[in-house]
Amino acid sequence: MALTFWPVQLATWAGFGAVSILGTLPLPDRTRIDSYYTALTVTGFLATLLLRSIYRRLSRRELAVTALTAWIAVICYVLAVPQSWLAIYFEWVIRFKTLHPHLPANILSSALSSAVTEWVILIAWSALYFGIKQWQQAQLREEKFLLLEAMAQQARLRALRYQITPHFLFNTLNSISTLVGEGDDRGARDMIALLGDFLRTTLVVSDTEDIPLSREMLHMEQYLAIEQVRLGDRLDLRISIDSAAHDALVPSLLLQPLVENAIQHGIARCPAGGILAMEASRVENAIRIIIDNTTEPRTTSLGSSFGMGLKNTADRLTARYGGTSHIEIRTGDPTQWTVIVTLPLEAATAP
Image (cartoon, rainbow, N blue to C red; front, top):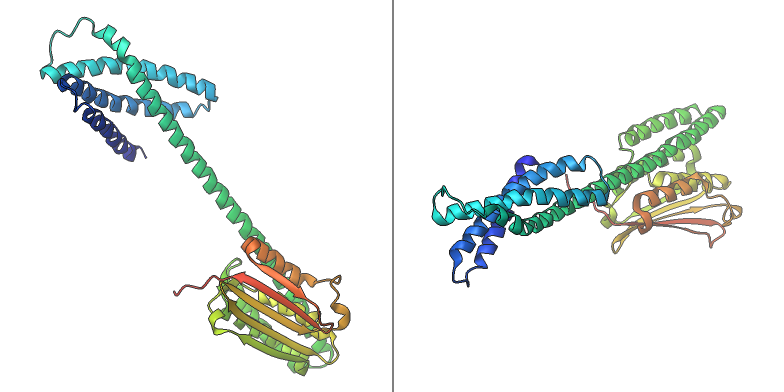
């Protein structure tokens, strides 16, 4: 930063000198005034270079505002006196174009009397310097806050994501155990193979990664294949995905706990099985996903447990989208359970 600051400061002082000299154009005797402003610009640039070095050391002491203000006032005046003297000297040299051996006898008193001008300029520069520093620190604090907030959100999403796999594995392994107990060795082997394919696919997805809906549906097809082995003809699948929604980004494994909840708490409890219908479509600037399943009438009460799948999904949507997502549960039909998920539309970009 030290290498890039002084050119900016030089350009600023050059602009100050140019504006000051342009302001003297209407005056009849410009030589003396232009000489003074030229000298004031050069000495001001040198003084503020020194001030910047002093202020960097002063900032490390973390002084109170009143103490810092007092220090700034004193330091600026201490520098303003020699700056005023140098400005008068440079003005003398510029006017007479020689290092005049006999300077005016009253140069010191003139420097003391005119130092107020330089002092005010240095005070203004100091206020600007510390104002910029405060703005930079505020920006840095905001960036750190946003980074910490993003890290916290990722941690929440990761924790919620990790809840899915153990719960799913428990249910699947329990199903495999049931098949083995029933003597259905082939069904158990098929389910183990399908479970391996499902885990292989899902474990390569980042904990907090958003994926296209089409890819999420591939995960669901692998999961539903596992459930199809367990339930057979009792599970009637009806899936309809609008082509306009294929590239929409959704959180990875968003649908799995919802579908698992629909099967475990709905269709699996019906002696005759039931229908699992999934529909996804684009509605203006949002994606709407509807999961509808057959259920026993006693499970449709709003006071009944929604299960881990619905709670986990609701928490993930809140952590990921805040208030821009929505999950709705409809239980008007005593034999149907409907979950509607609405997400803001975020399209996947081409690789």
